[in-house]
Length: 417
Image 1: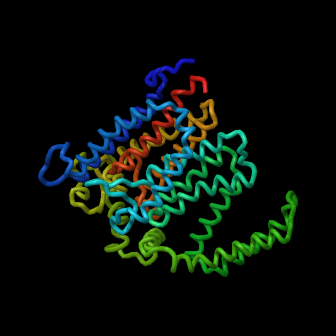
Image 2 (image 1 turned 180 degrees about the vertical axis):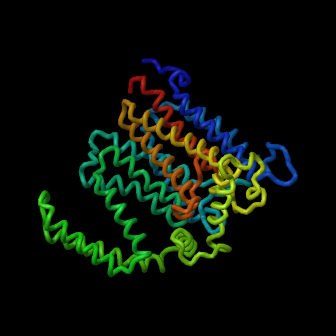
């Protein structure tokens, strides 16, 4: 069957949502970075001018993405993955350190953050593996293999960028959709839950609860093979993990990581230092009320009370100047976009396209949820940009490439593979 033109099969609803979010993002970047003496919107010496340039450069990138034969994304996914991993390793030698983090390559007067693009290559490669006929995610050895490939870039990135590493972990939802056993999700919930509990409760009390739970489960759960040795080993491992949390918290985590956790749980908070950003972001969002102060009228924004407001804190500008109503509109657009991606993913004819679609949804959802939650003190501040809204060429291009590769796969589902 002859390939139809992309325009005739492209999902324009998703494209429209994308354009709206990028447009809203630039308007808020403009407001949050506007100098006292206004200059041209095309002035690339200003943040909003650079972002407009990044948006302009996105167009030819997306044209190339849509022009490429979709089979190539699947065929060369392993190559993209290897290049991505090497780009992260290269940071340890050639990376530029900005604000204490070595996450960028400096190219002329601009910087490039490879971790953003590795999200794309990793998602492509995992989708490819899941679509291979001989790969069975229900087999333990295949589970170990695919989780290892997922956590390799995660561990490499975690050294300098915990936020991006967390986003990689979110791809487990993509694996779950394709058949990864529920146990892995429950293990993740247990690990996080015990870590948080150990910050508030003495380990001995947690251990008592664990032992009681294991005993009750062993006595009353007769539907499984109750091997006492396995129960004992699991109990010892969990107790060992509980007692290791304090050591990890005090000796492994960086000071700024501990500060952010302390801010979240209200422990040892200094509002003039580690608690300043979060406190100001909450004040700024709350000051907008129902309808906001009006575009370009945000006093907190104009006063520069929220540091780096055009990046990870861009939603505070929305909250102050657009109010609850404007914030709701932005959240609503994101929710509709995510629902649309999931809907399209479920209607794919190939397993590769479906898996990749769920990968796209997982990454965008985690970025969106974590960014919003960290601004309202429901999640630690870990430096995660809001997709399509936050300032930055690397994040904008990576998110756009991720989304439009999926749109290309979706547009091509009417053709023979």
